[in-house]
Image (tube, rainbow, N blue to C red; front, side):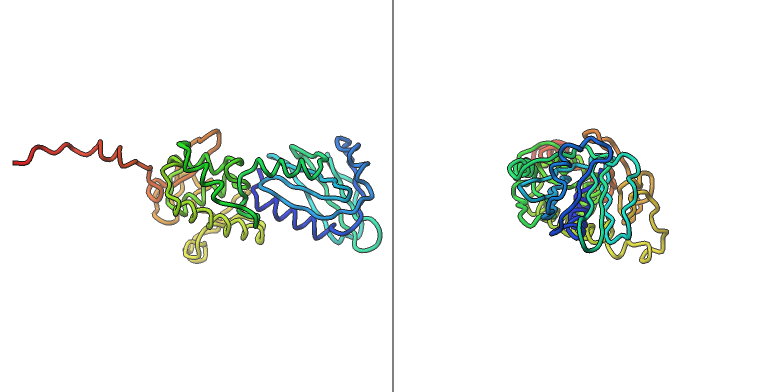
Length: 293
C-alpha cells in the first residue's frame, strides 16, 4: 500500500497539472460515471492529502475522495501532445479542457473513489491521527494515544487513527533509527523519545516526497560510503531492515529478523533494537541478596 509521501507527491502532481483549469471528467470503466457527469467541465481548484487519503477539490463544493488501497494507482501525465485511449480498468479520468498544455490522469484499482462534500472530507481527516507531512499536524495527539496504550509501538505506528500516513517501510525504519524494538509497549516510551521519532518521520517523509522513493540510511551507510552493492527491490530506496530478513545489519552485522505483528511483517535488528524489559521485570530477575553480617 502506498505510504503517505506517495499521496502527498500525487496531490502536488495533480495540482501542477490541473489546478485553476477546467477539466473533462469521465469514467471509462463506468463505476464512477454518474458522479463524473456531475463534475465534467468543472474548474479544478486543487488537491490535498491526509495520511493515505487523497482529496481532489472542484468548484461547487465537490470533492473527490480517493484511497488507493493495496493496488490502486493514479497516474498523472502532464504536458502531453495527445491523450491516448484508456488502457485497462480506468475508473476516473481527468483531462484538461480548453487552451493551454494538455494533461490527463487515470485512476485504476483504488479501494475508494467517491464524490463527497467539504464536511465529509473534514470528517474523514478528523478520524485520522496527525500526518507528519501536514503543517497543521499536532504530534501530541498521537503521543496521548501512545502513552496510554500497552499495544506494541510497532502496531501503534501503523494505526492510522494514531498516526496517519506511516506504512510498513517507515514504521520499520524509524524504529531501527531510534533503537526501539517493535514489540515495545507504547506506554513505556518517554515523551522525548517520541518527539525524536516524530521529528525523524517529518524529515524522512518530506524527503520521500522530493525523491519519490523511501531512503532511510544515513550518509555513512550508503552503498558508496560502505562499498556495497545498491539495494535491488521493487520498492526501491536504501533501508536498514525493511525486507532485509536474514541479511546482515548495516550497522552491527547482526542478522536482520522478521515476525508478524498485527497481521503485517515487521523487521528489526536484535542487537540495535534489543527487546524492552521494564524495570520491574529486571528487578525480579536479579538474584536475591542474603542478609548482611
